[in-house]
Image 1: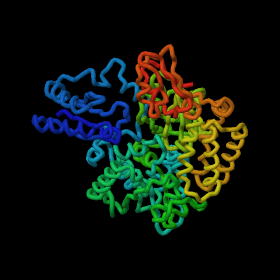
Image 2: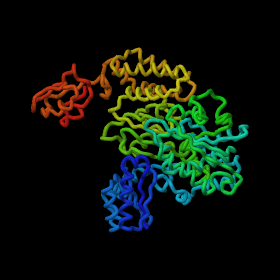
Image 3: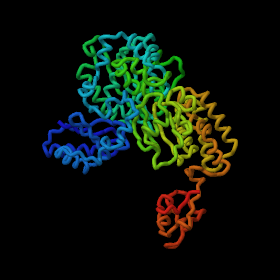
Image 4: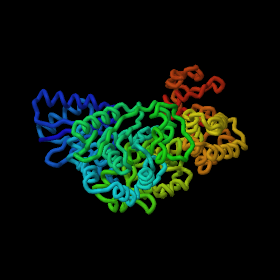
Length: 587
């Protein structure tokens, strides 16, 4: 029997996946076809959505950019007439984009995403689901579980990169009447969607990882702290928890053992600072999400004052695979200090935007060009921004740098949770630093003076520079403030907030100097430093630019060159976007 899979992660839904799915269902029902239709999560190729995969006799035909009309044709021509539509298939071409995208990937965390129906516990079970927790309950002591995770070299994928096995050992050895497991799914970085995609595509792997962690440290209760802005992920988690409870996989005496375990969902209210462990714990307890001084660390005194282990979604999703395949299988991948794989959300000026899981040790160039397909519109690769607002910018000249926690940290950036934004020559690095600093300044909880006020002062300086009002001494002042904020802030938000500014100053100082000395933005992004002019040689006098100008700053007769009144121009750029002849120029 043929099977049709429709990618209905958030990316697929936003591209029109629901309409495609409903069209396929209507056609199958109306024509009484013996076809299995199911929804899956995102397989990672977000740039090709809506994705529809037809599977028959072990052969896959992956259709890209499908709409309802194309869906009907797939039913008529492929399903009924048994004639695949070659021109729409991305894994059946001479140089398959699907093969190129997945060629250098190694999928552990994403092993089931885009393959199984995330709403079906049975499909997860057919892919070795819940075998790891059963093995743990029957064959391994808590200490043996921790040893396996420690020997695997798995480091926390939430950004800090702390050894997971060591973290579990601290929680195991801590004294407490009760212990807790928390999954940090408060993914707040702009451009990051790793956790969301995993929860939407394979929620059971995360639940199983949390169960194993609970057994290891002696916890019988867990919380998933997830952004309320992830409704589909929440829905699929709720369904997965319900299914587990009905099967006896959650509750008392799970899998017929003496172990008890229950999982609750706590929806976060959108505070970026609640991604920090102690702020997250405060939020679960019903308090304002503000970090506290550490030590004691959560492993000693966490939720409700009890020992608590916190890992993020990607970390837990690795656990079942490691238990089933062994520590050596995982540690054989990656580098000496960074083992296994890492999931990245590829965004920005890249051809193949989406989700990719690659072995640690792969270079930035390999991720950008081999996996991501290079830069859009054949523009020049300028930099990557890693780690979100807490991260930094790594220039294209360092593209051979290996993706490794320690090597990335040495650049001034951080690995973070896995957001990787690709930048080209149209990106202004000063404007980019201002964007991320504005984000962290808004998201500061306000507890620390240097974080609350220092980021505000830095933002004011960046505003002046992008307005053409910067001074030479501003650069030294920016650096001075940045280091004081890093040294004096209580939590990771303040300690890393200056990173985008420091890394852009380090690698792109000439852009700051151009803004200050020449009153020019090299990327032509900062409005106050742009002048729009019309080339008399190129202007055809079509009048379209004049019609688009909201302040009537453009004058001229039909079929004759036009002029822009610089005193009236508000530098909105509408004339530049409207001109089809390249006559409107940015200077």
